[in-house]
Amino acid sequence: MNCHTSSDCHKSDKLQAASIACLFAVSLLALGMPSSWAQEDQSITINVSKTNYGPGDTVNLTGTVNGGTLGQLVAIQVKDAKGNLILIRTVSTDQNGNFALQFKVPLTSSAGNLSVTASARINGFVVTQTAVPARTTVPEFPTSALVLSASLALLLAFHRILSGKKFTIQKFGA
Image (cartoon, rainbow, N blue to C red; front, side):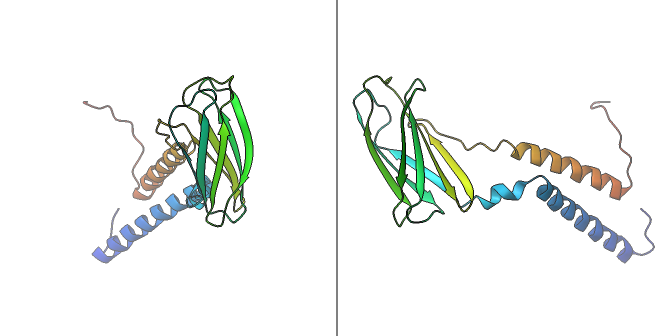
């Protein structure tokens, strides 16, 4: 890039930086990233009284719907250690978003960790959380990697175009 004065180059650098920032923001909007950001404060926590259960054991399940309202309906689904469905219930939250459910594990169930899934509609979004006691659950963001990769590729391509550099493929170590 040829600049006649240093201020022209400085203005051009600012324009490039602003263009890159705008492209990044637009690519995130186009690929739907803000919908996951909108749900940040909307979550469900699930707690059980112990980690392993056997047939006939009493389960004390509690939880909280963050971002919900009084009387929020929460659908609960419980599976035994082999993945067999043992319970489906709907409970309501109190004024603090808390819910509770007590039930006995059926005598035909497999002993071990229970898988508990809770779902609720919060501000128009269906929020679901699954908990398996004694295991750490990591939230999954299946589209985040795709959004990030696409955004970075667009950002790099746009930067190359603005800088006037040609696309070249280089071998490492050559």
